[in-house]
Length: 313
Image 1 (cartoon, rainbow, N blue to C red):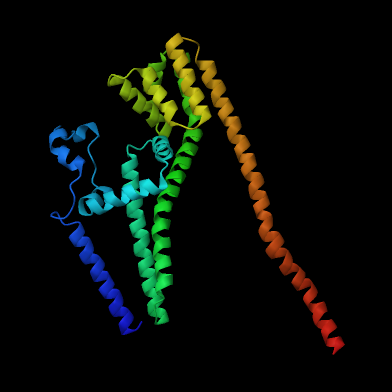
Image 2: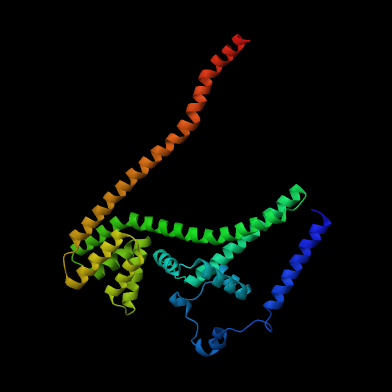
């Protein structure tokens, strides 16, 4: 890296920093309508930590406190360009997270900033090793790092939802049979749900326990269970909630329905295992065909080829 290029980069960084400082300084920063109305609207006291609704300190809260205006603007830009608020809201609900879409956009901004930082460090290390700096390659690498961080957070959310749904499906047969056993013993559906959530753990038990907690707080149990069915994308769990709702509303027999649903989910799990085994079997043929078999052929033909070449000479 020459002295001229280094001076240009330092001057560019200083100019950008000065522009950002001047732009976001309180005298020059435009006051939004939300900030003007906030002192007159947000007059409720903060919620108690005993209720579990208080904001927990973490990376998201710290980033908002330190880089609040910049992160807020970045979140709005990402939301404008990417869109898909309904899909993000549906995945957050399926994850059982209390985060909002705005919180998720802020997390995307943080991930994008980390990706940009990693790209800058990688470009700097590459320029030091090469002895020169390719401005175009460094700029493309920085853009790729920022975009990769933003899209990587969206991909990670999808992976979290898929893992949670797999856990729900794995726990569903046991929970359904425990509920069927409790109902057969003479307990009501509400008491059976309370007993099962008290004795078991896992994602499904926590979902049912949260629904029961909302019901005890004043929400009708039918509406609380319907919220669980609306948040999930699993057909088996939706049918399970529908069976509970019908049993609660109309008093229909529930034990046999729950056992049948548990058996259906177990059969579906067996089919998924067989399908996964078939895919893995095909994937196992790839190294055999493209690696082991060519090496075997080379070892078998190489001595004969050497003999033919020696005789030809």
